Length: 203
Ligand code: GRF
Figure (tube, rainbow, N blue to C red):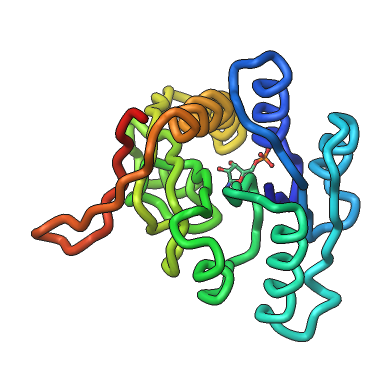
């Protein structure tokens, strides 16, 4: 798992594994921000951690190569981004084709980017939510694996809405990862849009 900040989604996944609700193993947590709470959460759960500060690298490519090497050393099958605030290079994605998963705090394709909750509020939508998707070379644009809706309530501000979205994220992330554990991932292309579509077939 890659994280940059608080790591509440990381915590939800670690907790779900601990109680047997998610059949998965977190081999390593890699963080680009020294001091991020996500690192401490991982250590507290007994998970291996690596801190790889992106500022130590002259280029995005060099940073990504270091992260790739750490992931390969850990023998990971999937790469799960949980609040990882760096855009990955095409070389990184080629290393893990259709194997990088992200969670985004909006119902994609609406409200991409880092201010998704604020945008939803400013747009006046009555329902927003969260999306778990495969990462491709665009921004928050890869094939969708799962979504959950969250109502926008009268009087919501960014903090109250973000908190409600976070609660939904924690459940959606665990549920989607467990579905991935139980299913084969099938990638097809929509005939009209040409977009890649992800679907899951029971094993
Ligand atoms: C989440 O809202 C997620 O959708 C976004 O970054 C946030 C991470 O929160 N990609 P946390 O660090 O898991 O608490």
